[in-house]
Amino acid sequence: MPTFSDPVWQKPQTAPAFQSELSSDGTLDAVIVGGGIMGLSTALYAARAGLSVQVLDAGAIGQGASGLNGGQVIPGLKYDPERLIEHFGKERGEALVDFAASTADAVFDVIRDEKLAVPFTRNGWIQAAHTETALKAAANRDRQWRARGADVKLLDRAEIAAMTGAKGYLGGWLDRRAGVIDPLSYTLELARVASAVGAGIAEQQRVVRLTKEAGVWRVSTQGGAELRATRVVLATNAYTDGLLPGLAQTIVPLHSFQIATAPLPAELAASILPGGQAVSDSRRILVYYRKGPDGRMVLGGRGRMAPPSSAADWAHCERALLRLYPALAGIAVEKRWFGRVAMTPDHLPHLHEPEKGLLAVVGCQGRGVGLMSALGKRMAGYLATGDVSRLPFPLSPIRPIPFHAFRQVGVAATIAWYRMLDALER
Image 1 (spheres, rainbow, N blue to C red):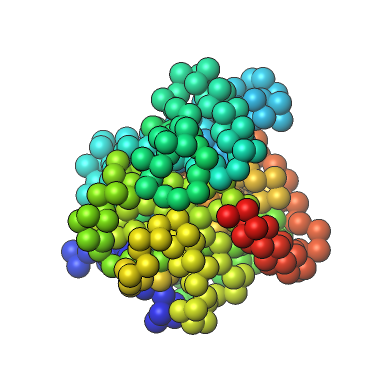
Image 2 (image 1 turned 90 degrees about the vertical axis):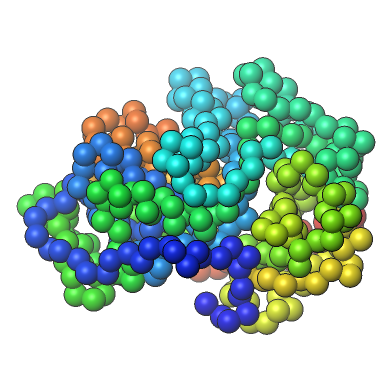
């Protein structure tokens, strides 16, 4: 990564290094390609179920978006319950709504049950509305989730001003099931406990070839190692390459740029997010923010499609911060970093099994902490039993996006257009 990408999340000096030497003896139950939250969650629960598992990561654990995101743990999907039931039908739709409602629980439960050393606060997430249209959408979402017993609340202008301390919101929606974590600590701790229960975790092991022979998958790495397994799970998400033909063309990887201020003075800190909630706003190019380590403000949003080339590439985040909190004008921005997010055309995760024993998962849609934690547990259940009903989403064919090579150009133009429209609504 460029030297100017300096995340606020820091790897503890006591964090373990994971083995790079691999044994080619025997046939594993599963090789998992990708050591992010999805891959590590799958490995943890698969090993708990008695499967022999090896995780291979091309870089270091926590180096990708799993360790670089904003640490917001948000339940649900992009779509509300009624839309999911309309799209998937009553039986699968209801099951998917139940799954979506559980994704934040999956994170906080594993932190508690496995005694993970992960800083967290579970005081909720606010979806802030800056227009009347967004406020009506929030009221509709509130109605649907309250009908299902969710701990949620519609906020008026005074309530959201008091809870956020931010300027410009008409109201919003509070989901108390949500919270915030240190995402790097979470990813590293998932790797630690997965290793402790028997899963192999190997860093700096890029997989370059998959072949199948007599019902067994051969997994070859750039370093010349070859593993054998009855099943392979590709959990590379936004970092997906050409290992499985066509898979990378089913997603559009976007960059999420983030900043963190210097620690806030006590008086300022008391007036901003006093309850410690996470926030995402309703703009077309949304920003999301929270309190971070040492009382810093952490804010992120969509950045340029290419990796950043200078500190100026984070200027849109700094402008957003001052629009929301003018009192922070004198506070230095000390940290800047970015990670990748994988988007699918229908804004839902996609699960594929193009050949028996070869599975792939892509598409976090920016909610990867909770979604991939919960999905990894379900994937482990499928690996252990072969029961496809363990999976919350249907297995679907790999369908590359038409004219994918031009899609990112179009997305970049759309982001620029939406950013202009958002500016007119300030």
